[in-house]
Image 1 (cartoon, rainbow, N blue to C red):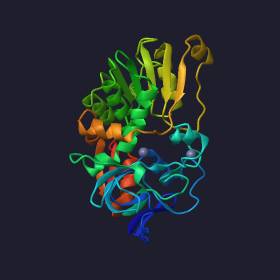
Image 2 (cartoon, rainbow, N blue to C red; image 1 turned 45 degrees about the vertical axis):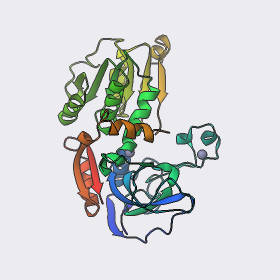
Image 3 (cartoon, rainbow, N blue to C red; image 1 turned 90 degrees about the vertical axis):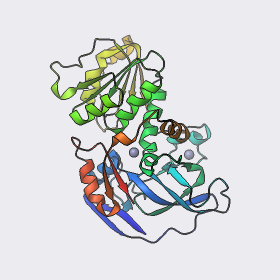
Length: 338
Ligand SMILES: [Zn+2]
Ligand SMILES: [Zn+2]
């Protein structure tokens, strides 16, 4: 089979790899059809990743959908020919976090294309049947692959406790931010503001239902142009300390700050404000139990993944695809179709 293997910084090679063997009794074998490129793939490609560098060559990609081509002995729920979306994190199901239901926090997680372990940019992979989900007929493989970033957004909006009447501000209009804005509206928010620096992304946010977009490349003051204490919940998808600091004064007393974006920097947040305003600061790491719901909303057309896709490449063009994905002014979600 063909696979896109990362050998080192800016060194990705599309090459032949042995096919995986027969799936284990509880696994299915998937012929991968679409993979979305994500910030973590770019991080690996350009700078060796967020945790520990590139320890061994591995296939990038963790946002995947495809066709089942073989099923293990104990798998009754699927048959060859089924179209599926793939949940990319395989937890141990044995540790305290798994046992208490927080499997996204499993310290033994095998997450595709993290810690130098193989991801989805290969034609075939074996994966546990309980981590693949039927793709409704009217959804494309591309949409199926995007259930992963949509799951991060879904999980963020849940943690943010957005409900009827909530005023929400989303920092960053990348794929996650654009999906957060959609889920926040779906959850009942009466105001969804979205910030970014790129006109293309702000326009998309508007098209997808944001009530207001704020171009932070052209701010006149130190903070966002929002009344102090006018926002119930700020959801940050940027991981940029300055973006969070700019939005901070807008959070209401007893409001929430939900942090999804990742960075190694420390946050310059006012302890006085967090305590005096009795704010809740909530981190969100990946997701759990989201695939059936996200697939439902996509199938019903209540959430849209298609407009996030700006570019499509073949597996052989993996390097070109990664370079395109890094171009924030032109690209939002870049797909590789195999
Ligand atoms: Zn992702
Ligand atoms: Zn575990």
